[in-house]
Amino acid sequence: MATAGLRKISKAVLIVLVACGCSMSSSKKSESGPTYQQAMEALYPDVLSAMRATMPGIRPDEYSGGTENCGGSEWLDSKDASKRTISSYISLPGAPSDKRTPASLVDGVLQQLRVHGWTEDTHRPSNVPGNEVTKYAKKQGGNGIVVISASPFKTASGDRIQTLVAQVVTDCLRNPDYNKS
Image (cartoon, rainbow, N blue to C red; front, side, top):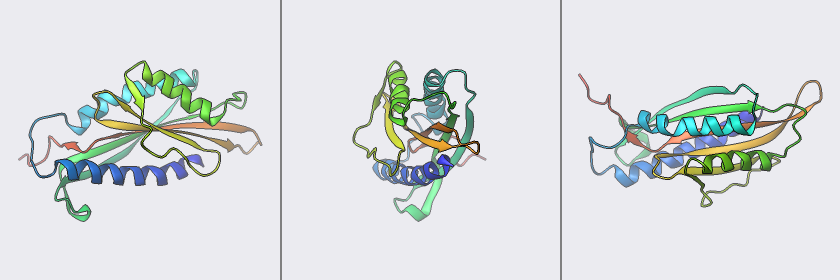
């Protein structure tokens, strides 16, 4: 299914985000600033709303991508839980009657996100092999990104539908539960 390819991409994106986010701020332990959960609470509703507006009437599948430790040492294999990143997925299978292209679906989500202060991150690669289209967006003042992708999927009945997926990933941020007794 199309989400298997996205999971491979998203793991790579998550590793890059964790590595970049932590290496810039790991030398100073901070007890202030947003937590990874607060960042997700600020980003997720906009993305869910944009996805629903792009494919109205379709119930989204929502699931967590989990958390990753990213605090402590700058070496990837020795991160502690003082800082974390979290990711969540929203997936919408299109209707066979929806003939929009993957590019138009992704652009539709981006258009909806712009209303909420998001901008496309054109510094990240958006080319994915095959017919899948992937783009990235960041919210002004937000602490994370969204990876939006769409790809065609052939059903068992032979219908071709578009699958629209968004992955919301927070920056490497403070874990409020670290070192609590």
